Length: 299
Image 1 (cartoon, rainbow, N blue to C red):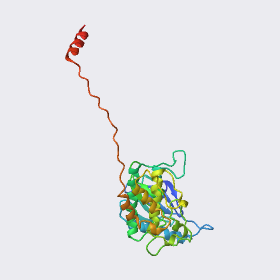
Image 2: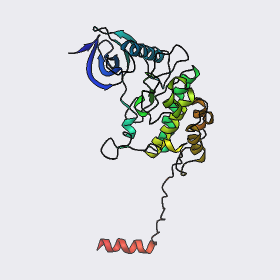
Image 3: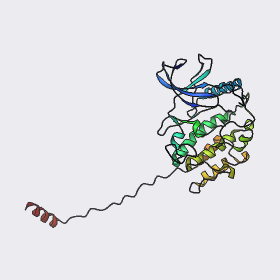
Image 4: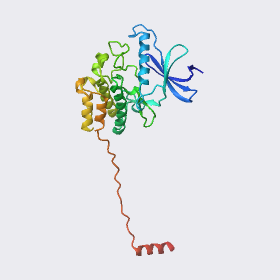
């Protein structure tokens, strides 16, 4: 039975640039947990050294642990394994947002890209924006808002838990980062692709705008075409919010996630139209006809 510290390993579920996510069992509390284990190795051409990656890993754990927010994943503890590698412990989450919407740009199969109803989309966006607003208030920028980093507490109507602070920008004393952006660019603001070390909260707002389009349409927008335009079947205020959030010029965007959240609050929810039920009045049977029918039955 493999263990990491006291935790009994169940399965490894994901590898990131410098770490592995492993589902485990806590033998003391008798609950499932998720461990993020430092796993960087020295490789030729790697933009950062192992000590630099470890500095980012420790910064991530400490940044997450600083929050007590319903839509940010918690860190229970940080420990060191028998092999000297640090790891931190988080609550087990049932899935991430890709479980609901599929993988990006996949046309067929169980992982095909899917869109969500407006009501569910608004709920998920409000939860994500609420978590991000807490970061922005502290001068942090997440820099990696995408479906895989939005965990779900359940597979049916789960709540969002914002995760993966591996690329978080702190207000000061930032760990090393290469000149070029290391992460995915599908949800990434244009200024972040050019220089991730100088971005502010508006880079996360850009990602929220792209995420909105992805959730509602089931597809990624063409970011080379400028600001993202939702189909005009959606409320004008939502179309305007997404357009402003994805303005290539940061100055044209909402200043932070709180402003985006405020905009979402003005979007009218879907009106559930009840099916029309046609009421057919019962035809009254004359008394004489009732008597005749009764007599016929007696015969």
